[in-house]
Image (cartoon, rainbow, N blue to C red; front, side, top):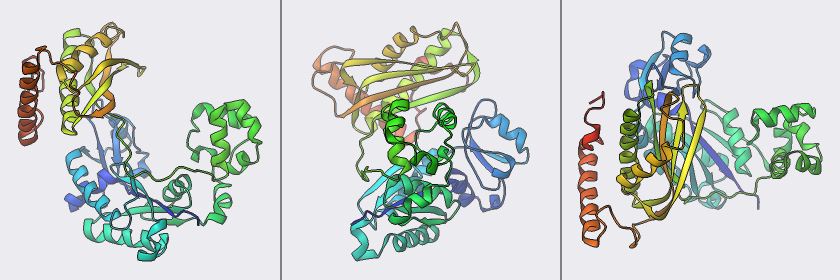
Length: 391
């Protein structure tokens, strides 16, 4: 029995939530993003798209293209709240729900046919419920593989439903440009173009051996995808691989003291988030983007995992020394914790270096986290951060 997989993707999610909360914005070009000086667009309503507005575009550029646009800051807590309601609707039809992000996910409804009918019936009912219970639209793609279902929902946007029968998979893919394939970036695109490959159908006719010789293991994957083959299953409980936070500054930073303050601020927020999920991380990664947009990362793996902000900050201070931050202006800093595990290992000592000290530090973390939860993450901060400009 062929699998029935649905890919569901909210339409212009952040912008749509803003219109939902303020109906006077309906029909207007709404753009959600960061600061006007340095931020990027995270979502744009479909009314903004004709002006050339798209995600990851600098807000300053979007403002030049669409000066009449309504520019709003992101409200992640609100978007997460709406997302949870929507995913609860998804789970009414199957427990096999794999979130890809806050606004999209895969559903394997193969085993739901007896209760709810086929995948197309389920997708139509989900779209109706999201519209009626939440007030938003969602596009759906149906196929026998995750890869094809994702392409189908993209082609159906906005507010569409595209169903690809298993036997029609290759005919559906053949005329599409190769840029629709996962893993075809600028370099791979140029290489395929030199081979005379422009569409997925063209690629499916290239011998697999030639693709393996040209691109290695990536070539094998491209060969399979071009024929609609994707053996991956829907994974409802994918473990979180990393947690982090990054900040784009309104002005490039060169002062080391200012850079250290930003590191401490980020370390505090990342550690708090990791603790909130009952996790610890063993690998600390520092992300630095210079003013010319060159991006570098530096990582360190600890002997024992941590969720302590002071320890994360200390490690990142050492990693910062391995970059050109300060000598070169810095546009963005980010901190990530990965290799996450549940709980705090018995072997980890706090800065106080004894069992009682560790217990007191964990109690302090719990108290500070509670204050942050009740009054906002800036309610209590390290003294070093009190002279940050926004304070």
